[in-house]
Length: 82
Image (cartoon, rainbow, N blue to C red; front, side, top):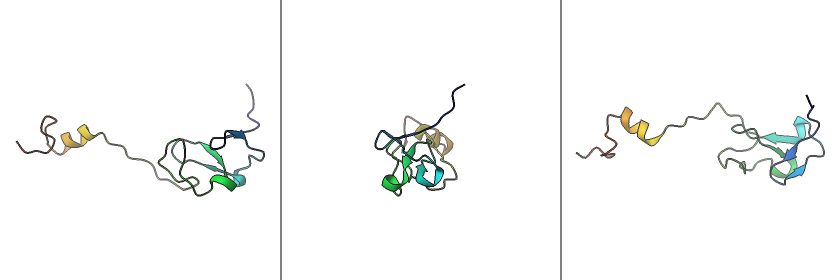
């Protein structure tokens, strides 16, 4: 098994010179790693959903059709007009 000795900054697509946790930020959703000096307070370029370095409690994704079924609406009549 090979040991990971360096990381790739996914914003610049370059090897991180210093990959210590104090100099990197991580996307809470997909785990992408970026250089903190350049991407500290930006939105993740991989998922375009999360602020880099922010704490996240999780992500709740619900499909539109499932939500309509839970509300008792028909998928043929999504607005419930019939």
